Image 1: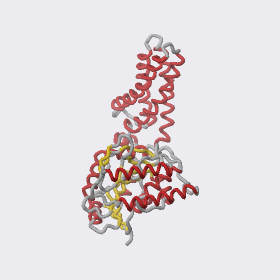
Image 2 (image 1 turned 120 degrees about the vertical axis):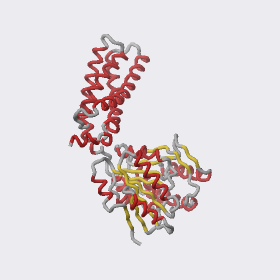
Image 3 (image 1 turned 60 degrees about the vertical axis):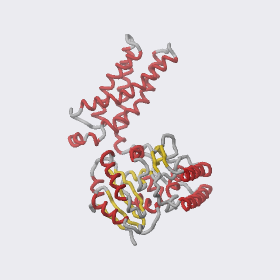
Image 4 (image 1 turned 180 degrees about the vertical axis):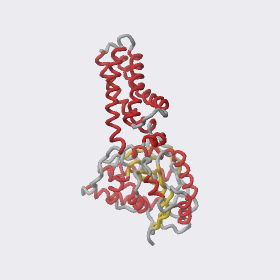
Amino acid sequence: MSEISLSAEPQARLGMISEPRGPLIEIAIPVYNEEHILAASVRRLHTYLLETFPYRFVITIVDNASTDRTWDVASRLALQFSEVEAVRLPQKGRGRALRHVWGTSVADVVAYMDVDLSTDLDAFLPLIAPLVSGHSDLAIGSRLSRGSAVVRGPRREVISRIYNLMLRTTLAARFSDAQCGFKAGRAEIVRALLPAVEDEEWFFDTELLLLAERNGLRIHEVPVDWVDDPDSRVDVVHTALDDLRGMLRMGRRWLAGALRVPVPSRRLPAGMRAQVPSFAVIGLVSTVAQLVLYGLLRLFMPVVLANVVSYFLAAIANTAANRRFTFGVVGTRRIVRHQLEGGVAFLVGLGVSTAGLFALHTAWPHASRFVELAALLALNLFAAAIRFALLRAWVFHPRRTPDLEEENR
């Protein structure tokens, strides 16, 4: 049987990609004889993403040679929702399913989750965000890190902890949870790693992560809330034996020096290449202006008040300049909202700088003006990175200003 693909409209994915509305995220859901929960899970995921997710998405159901009515259910869902696709493969294997979907994806970020949706969906945006920003290369949900909340039986808990402990002690793995069915990666990175991944079943995830670490890639971990599915189809003993064989194989490859893979270098998202220099220049000018103003105000104001006033005036000018030159927003529409939200971003920086100056004067009450200015400069540089992230991801995010985007064309 050859691979079968089905979507609501033959050109649905191409149509979505052609619209300049930010990154596309593809979520693969591998399934085998899951007719009883597939429809409910996909509908729940689809609704959640439509209502809360800020990026474009496509959900791809991958049927691994099911013998029940799973393919019929998947086909109906693909015909019903333009954001859902269905693919049928002639052989079983989660790794095989992910290799097929991720290897042929035209999305910017590829992900997968288990069909039972055991992982709370509120963790999905934190999983994807560092990949979209370019901060990380892969991202995984972790049930074993601090902050996670897990409900599962003691047998699976013990097996999972032993397995991950073995990975850390024998293969020097630094990630905490290799098996959680909640992972994502930058598509270009994943495509570069796939040819070196040999496993087609449950060890696929672990092998991909080990290869990523050996090649200096950055793996982001997200603590997740996770509830065990009592109807899971995973054969724990068989899977554990396969994992042990996979670990042995990876150990041999590691000792032989055969884990090097040519991977793309981490780079800034397209829009950032122009935005970062502009933001830096504006930030430098406003920082110098604030320092000069601060020095003048300190002639007749206490340290904290001088910092607040100079920071407030610099914030107004900085937000206006970044609005026009960094993010390309012209005209007066929503200018008040942008200034207010930009003010929030500056309040974060103000909190950082004020707390730092307060700490300086507490530890060193007679610090000179030169020391004050040097400390303020260092604190402002740290706060600038936070402000840029807030301005780019919130205040001037394209999805929040579609009419301004249209106006500027």
